[in-house]
Length: 408
Ligand code: AMP
Ligand code: MG
Image (cartoon, rainbow, N blue to C red; front, side, top):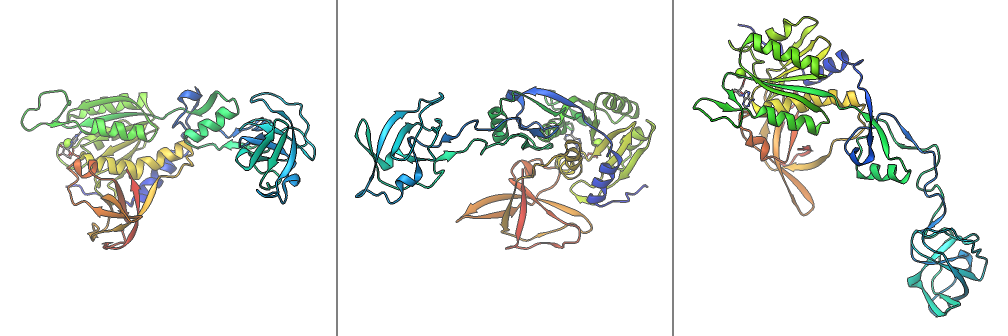
């Protein structure tokens, strides 16, 4: 009987990161319309000022701010209206003390003006005369040339996953095509004599292939491109062939099932038969997810995930995701919240324990309720809102503790 020599989650992450530290992703150019959620390959540096000209942030009148000092409803400042700035057009109006011109939101500030008084704080006496009823500060309601983006400024750093605001910033610079990392390719292999395709008739004793789908989705969520998805039997030759094919086609090969030490667990043997470094680690101190294999097969990362669907996803999040972050030089932070535990939960001795929780919010405070369930049950995960991690040295979590919750 062979036993695991389990390593810490941190060690597993470091082994992978170190082993593949020189593994580089290529870049590709994508249209801005399709750039959402992609990762920027190199710093985007502005070659322009945004805005290109001083702009008004309100509908109002461009004035010399000092003219408005001391103005009120009862003692308004009286100004001559000398014109109107047209939206989207240059203006040759020149403002000096005692004069003003109408400017729409986003319109160009005429020369000589240094503030805009909101229309709500003025009254038109007649076509040519304006009463200013409130003072404005110098530069109030004005966005200066280059105040948003300056020339030579880094607008988006390498490793940022593009969100809608990034897309907008790129659009403001007229950048319609962006250089992003090519998505790392992944092959997903589900193993097990009992596993059948989800469209096949479910005979007694068989199990539908959950992992192909859940891991595919998890991989997509993490920015991977799934290039192959197969089910193979617990058969050494079939398994070896599938892994070999996966290595040829992809950057990462994920297997699920057959990674333990059972009689029909061939993953380890199959990987080692491919040559190269082979298995780097077998067994991680994590619950759920202990029977995990980490390998370098022909220069590619091969991970043998446990068969239990929840375990497979947990190990993916714990050890595969950090590697993807390294590949992408990712700078984006994972969303978490802090929540008060509503119940005690014990940790598994000698392991990092992933506890799935439900979150509710009451009077502005988040509460996390741990779910008690087995790793063979997909609903333990699908009905959860997030998870907390109890580190190996912790005995558990207590009711009332404030914990960081990773949102699913
Ligand atoms: P294994 O790691 O191969 O021993 O599998 C552990 C458990 O996970 C077994 O009960 C398997 O039937 C189950 N399992 C393995 N692969 C899958 C899969 N792709 N979908 C659903 N359950 C699976
Ligand atoms: Mg199996």
